[in-house]
Amino acid sequence: MEIRELTEKVIQFRDDRNWQQFHNPKDLALSLSLEASELLENFQWKNSEDAIAANNEKMKEELADVLMYAMLFAYETGINIEQAVEEKLQKNILKYPVDKAYGVSTKYTDL
Amino acid sequence: MEIRELTEKVIQFRDDRNWQQFHNPKDLALSLSLEASELLENFQWKNSEDAIAANNEKMKEELADVLMYAMLFAYETGINIEQAVEEKLQKNILKYPVDKAYGVSTKYTDL
Amino acid sequence: MEIRELTEKVIQFRDDRNWQQFHNPKDLALSLSLEASELLENFQWKNSEDAIAANNEKMKEELADVLMYAMLFAYETGINIEQAVEEKLQKNILKYPVDKAYGVSTKYTDL
Amino acid sequence: MEIRELTEKVIQFRDDRNWQQFHNPKDLALSLSLEASELLENFQWKNSEDAIAANNEKMKEELADVLMYAMLFAYETGINIEQAVEEKLQKNILKYPVDKAYGVSTKYTDL
Image (cartoon, rainbow over all chains, first blue to last red; front, side):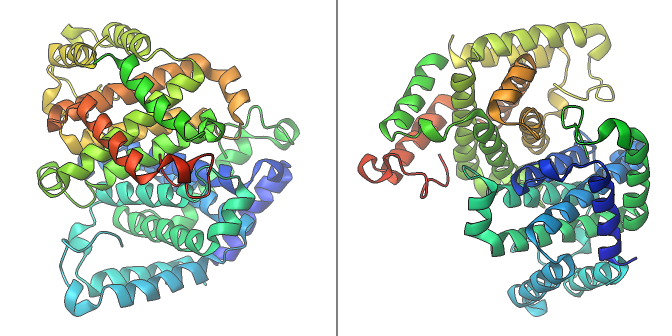
């Protein structure tokens, strides 16, 4: 599915409820951060394997929440998601040349 | 663009650098949470308008980081992003019926 | 040192700069969350031992930032820190009886 | 009350339950970040006044959780809390001279 099409479904849900009035970018960014924490909470006191065995369905829902807020934030701030990801990827390709970054975690401080 | 196609570009970038070995789901969820905080940091001590006027390009990059980690997390845990979002949307449609939720923020505790 | 005394030093620093005007509780809670993420960032892609070996001084500074925002938040909202911790500890003692909670991580979802 | 004394009560609670085995610094920093998010969640879609009117008792508990994890993290990593805060305060005093920082939020990117 196109990202645009998925975003439209989320906006439709929001507008059917007249909720745009609450969706200022600051509160959307705050909500995105809260949902990312809820996803991370599944891993509290656990390693990856145990966390996934325990809560796979819950992770799926919380990842969906993260993505919906990301789409709403992008929509409200006029960011084109595909373009944003492709531009950041190009930047990372220059920042982490394959011959220097191959298999190296020590310099790997962000994606 | 299809979400799958965008995800494939991110995975390609990752695999070209032999970084999958670091990408356990716990550290990916942790990184997703850190990037969501960096996006939120743009709004520290500011309202939405001032934050956007000051840092629009930075927000775009940090939203891209959030999305790339979300795609990597989904890929490593076998979550289909479109399906996850559509299922959560269906759940929210039942949880927030239009006639009760219309324009109401008081009961509006999550999307 | 008394907690009250340490808080007074932080408030003094703040008031010398006439910064109370920016310190609404929402932005203080937001800043506390951002600093907690910066502390956590030291552990990204690392286990505890490697993280501590790499960044012990940085952790100390970021833990201090967390604590200063916690003290400022408590001050602005009229929360007595010692009382808050002692009351929560009493609540946890009832919630996690020693005979049931001893050495058990599975039911250990929060402190 | 002395910070040391309050910390000892938290450690006593923890050791009575034989929970030190779970308290590696990475998971403590992760838990601290999660609790800071739960505190922040009280302000989601709300301004400071409405949030405090709605949830003051809940905020008090979540601030206590933040502080308990901060004390546990400090204990496990050998950080002296008072010293950490006083050193950071000294650093900030040099970084933000009163004559330049007085009443200025624009350069005020961290405490």
